[in-house]
Amino acid sequence: WRAYHNMQIDTLRRSCPDHFVTHNLMGFFPHLNAYDLCEHLDFASWDNYHYHGATPGTIAATHDHMWGVLQRNFWGMEQQAGPINWSVYNPMPAPEFVRLKTYQAIAHGADGILYFRWRQALAGSEQYHSGLLDHAGRITAGYAEASTIGAELTRLAPVLEATRPHAQVAILLDYDSRWALQLQPHNRALRADVADDHVSQSPALRVDRNDRREAQPMTGGGHAGWPFLAPYIALWERNVPVAIVAPDSDLSGYRVVIAPFLNVVRPDVLDNLRRVVDAGGVLVLGPRTGVKDETNKFFTSPQPGPLAELTGATMSFTDSLEPERPNVLRWHHVHNPHRIEIGLWAEVLDLSDADVLAHYSQGWYANEPAIALKRHANGGQVITIGCMGGPDLYENLFHWLLPQVHVEPLLAPVAGVEACARVSDDGRRVVFLLNHSSQIHHITLANPIDDLISGEHFGRQVVLRPGQVVIYEE
Image 1 (cartoon, rainbow, N blue to C red):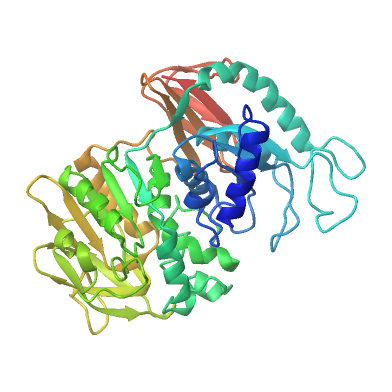
Image 2 (cartoon, one colour; image 1 turned 180 degrees about the horizontal axis):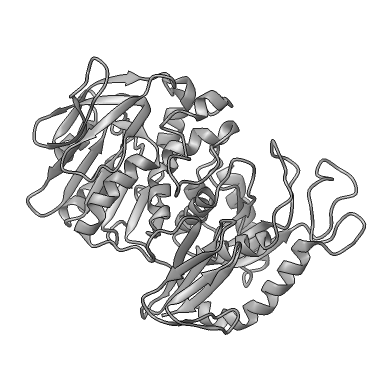
């Protein structure tokens, strides 16, 4: 696939050397290594559909992954313009949906948006897939919203030019590790081909734990990706920008680097993670980390294999949990506002040179370590998480950790409101406020702003209607 893709790229480079070359991906689609596939493109693109089971946070994560593929701005090659036809349910989007989704993409680094499709198909397998025009050629609500955006972007383009997302936190997505886990999940709930509502209610996959949690549980095969997204959602809800990048990419600009499931550890990745810690950064390692080498063979040393020098802890044994048999964490010296359940996977840690952050509180291994912290002499820290949990687990951890390393949110959390920014090289910041909820929200900002879309001058108090977008410069 990669060779065939590169052959086409080479042909285009010879035939039209002054044109850009891109190709549309499909988000977290698991079958292709997006980093390798896109290596020779000018920028990546992707098809942005809010399928049933997706949430604003999972779509935001996909945007950030698409940016991280080449660590440069991307395009939305297919932006949804109305109801789709291929999900398990295909509801009609609410008013302002197309506009909201378009601006969310731009906020996360999209420099181009193409709507799919122009006119609803009269024949073929996607007849019920909406377009900017319906099958009779009538203008749709999506057309009206796209027209409004087109007019607005003539004013916004000069402000957005030469800006890009900027994050102090990185999440590592490794395709080799992902494939190794899919081949040997060791737990039915982690199989990519399982579509089971019972499974989706495991505490490791649940998304509706409190009033800030996204309302809909993952459904169908989409729930298999949730463990990769749990730390992202916890950061997204705190309005902390995140980059999702390859584990062998340059990590020097990030204060916190999170590897949720780095099952396969290659020598270059090991060196990269050492550099993060040596530079005084924080490395967060999730369960099943450091089990295998680059040939998919188990290390002869205990998990996390060669990373043990950084963690000060090894895995003693693993418990693969049924969905109905969760466990509960008890935290040490960490903010714990409510009960934190974990599920599907529990590793008991053996600490040689690390402190306990949390231990299990149920079952025959109650009081055994679940999460450990090793502080290095140079100020670097390594946190080892031996269990699978949903966003609540990471929310609890980040509430304690991020203030220590001076990672600040763009906006104090507000249910259903997303804040993100694009930043220029000289530090100019364009901030987007997006109301994904069905409620009116009153937002308090540090300074008065002018909305770049409407031209309205706000004081420090901004009123956001459902689906409304406000953009300002600071």
